[in-house]
Image (cartoon, rainbow, N blue to C red; front, side):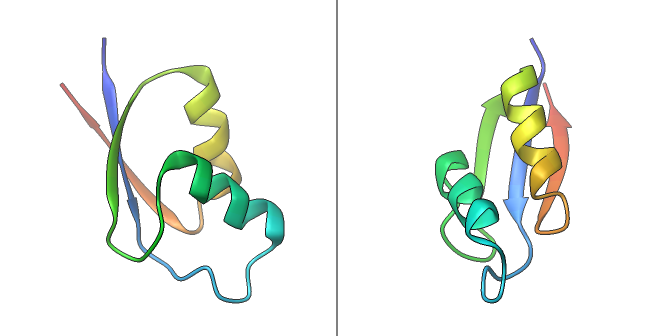
Length: 60
């Protein structure tokens, strides 16, 4: 199964509460934090919500 490497590239300052909660639930707290998650529809949807704050790469 493919995995996603999600990196926070922008600050949460000034962002909506929903976006802050989504990043927190992904496990991201500050700029340049990186998490690796399974490529599942739930995580894809979360990443889509905060796509302007994160960078995503597929890893094997």
